[in-house]
Length: 69
Image (cartoon, rainbow, N blue to C red; front, side):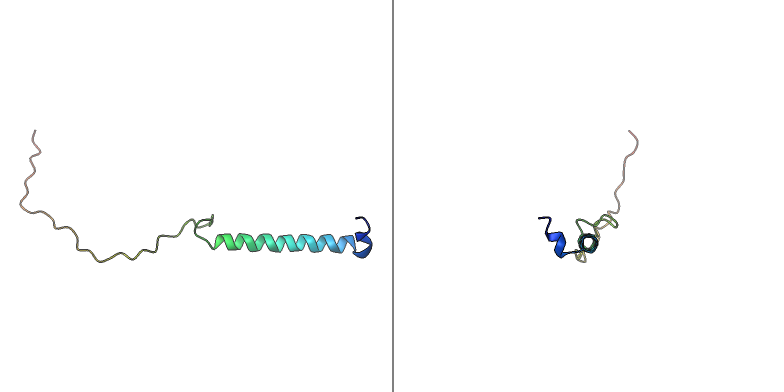
């Protein structure tokens, strides 16, 4: 196994490995930030559910509340 270092310069190989792992880590973190579940900065986005137009409930008129007990 040690003979592999006769083919490659150890400094250049290790620098290349560190750079590759840094690019891979940043890519995975940005992919996770683009999802709703794993976005730890903004949190989950509001649900994109279309609310249908519903008339409000009518306010009852003429109702007398007896607050005296």
